[in-house]
Image (cartoon, rainbow, N blue to C red; front, side):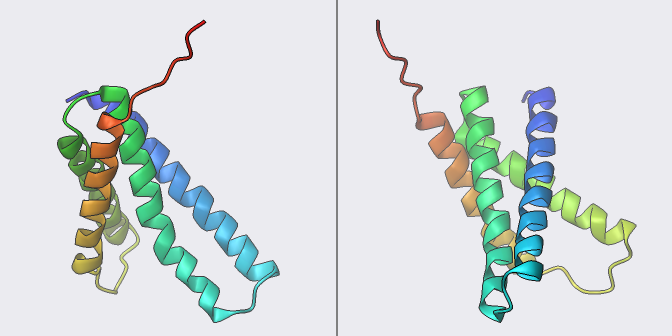
Length: 121
């Protein structure tokens, strides 16, 4: 386990989620009054987890299953930490968080198994 790369890609995950939520919020506030557009919030987190676990596993080049689980563990720890820090009174949906685990695992497996295609000159 390369802790430096894990922390680097965990920071990427946090920044990516915040940026995506910011743009969705701006879009919803100024341009869309439809309640059906709120589904994009529930799609944003698994998509960000998938992309980050794919990139992390691609940079490490080994054990995609474990790399996906590592990214998910960091995400889940951040969610729990935010609940404690901000004293959020609501419950965290454990089922929803566990559904993000296969997404992270698939991203990690695909990241390890994709090869960089370098054009030959």
